[in-house]
Image (cartoon, rainbow, N blue to C red; front, side):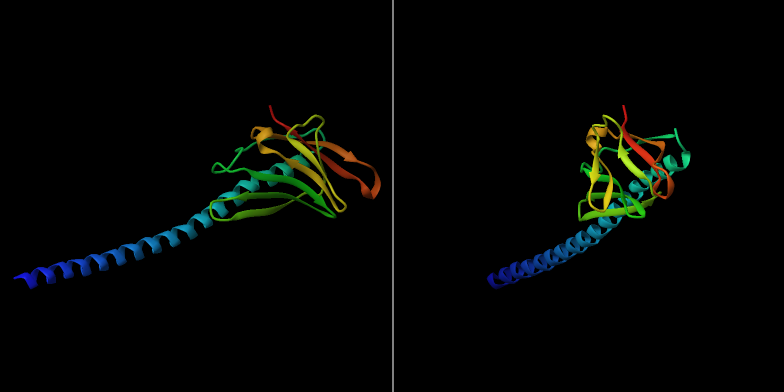
Length: 172
């Protein structure tokens, strides 16, 4: 009878070990599958988020002199800050966005009309970008309070070097 108790205990431990291995394997499989899905969803969410800035720049450009586009947006995404800049480099302009998501860093460029993007007078949320080959405006989303204004103020200069000027101001 005594040897039977040892066999039962050993069988119990073997079954418990097999069950534990199956549970750990299922957890690992679920974790890695979910991690890939989270990255894909974050990427999609942030890409869609950036389109509103592209649309705002296009609307301000096409609206003509005196037109102002009023843009509201989230100050942060999923509790994390993001960076935003309207940049003109050579013959092309882009909205540059970057965000550190849960699983990786996302950065996207959106083409916008080639114009001179500058901060409006006294805009605390916008700072001018100046470089040897690029210029534009960097936006601080916290200072902007999730609200900026893009205003078409007309042409800068004359002749072939003339560009439309888009001013970026903080919302109320």
